Length: 433
Ligand SMILES: C[S@@+](CC[C@H](N)C(=O)[O-])C[C@H]1O[C@@H](n2cnc3c(N)ncnc32)[C@H](O)[C@@H]1O
Picture 1 (tube, rainbow, N blue to C red):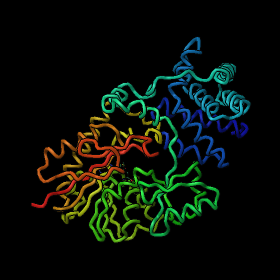
Picture 2: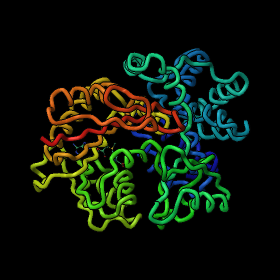
Picture 3: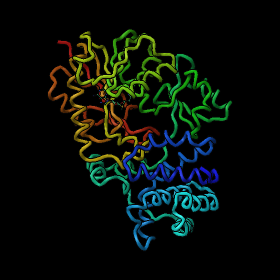
Picture 4: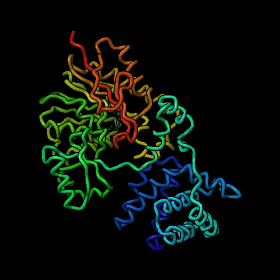
């Protein structure tokens, strides 16, 4: 691209947001494609910040366009609309007006929208003067999902919407085979990175400000991983005994499998994922951490044990089930764009199918941890209540308060509580008759 670097970045931002906002593409996939196109790490960080901020304030930006435009933008104006979202995001990020406005106006020209450059300039200058109009809590949630959250969490819904619109802190998981959170925090401090250990998740450090993974001392050598505190609590909830035969039924990209092995290298672990490309991520995760040896990896539908199970029961099973991801909207704001009401019904069926199919592979006396990053009761406490009702040899084991509030037979942390992602855990024990 021949445009100046600042302009190229805005062009990338507009194209990325156009794909996510208007063509159903995932933010993660679009960022993975766009970031390598920018040579300067500061530009990559800015593109990421623009994309996340734009999606987090989408409802307010749409309200501004609805109020400020005499005529709504047309169907063919998708990239222009996306560029405006990117421009508003830059103002929200506090970029100097000349950089935010001028480079975005230039980007309109570079995108073949010279005839609309004046409009972009006028709208961004108005946003600079007035700010974006406010929006109702949850305005950027699809109406069916907003109603579901309000029905499931009447007293907490507004706090859920607010927390989901905030940037998430970076959490690190320290590889306890190599170091401790306290010792690693000191190394971070020496590198100018402030971090705080967690009273709830024993291997966790929470960074005061986000930083590039490459800047984390010892990352490539496997001393540390990036993982939210809620996700780290899974290893505590399952806590398999040394030498246990363990199944991670939905393992990709492998964060929780790796944590289980860092905790207890003697586990005999089988890790499945139905997506072969995602299973490759599990392999890469384990290799970086030096944990791959002895792990059995299989690309398979966990709900069809005949295809992958040798018949020897597992002592412990982790079912970190596919879900609506409604507890991690702050990390994946595009969830709100892509989720359909029909997804909830389909996911709930898949979760039930996985629970029913995996239960016979668990040894009597063994534990199955059911976890989701959802906050919908249908996927969480109601899912478990229905499973318990139809499974005679299953009983639930309560977990301590650090796993979140009691919710039916499980435990729910809502997004932002303790600085962590929204998560649900239920530990099920198989009766020995
Ligand atoms: C919440 S993610 C798992 C995250 C993972 N446990 C970790 O900590 O990195 C759910 C995963 O389930 C996989 N999945 C969905 N349906 C599945 C099935 N029927 N059998 C096995 N894996 C499945 C998805 O491909 C996805 O990778």
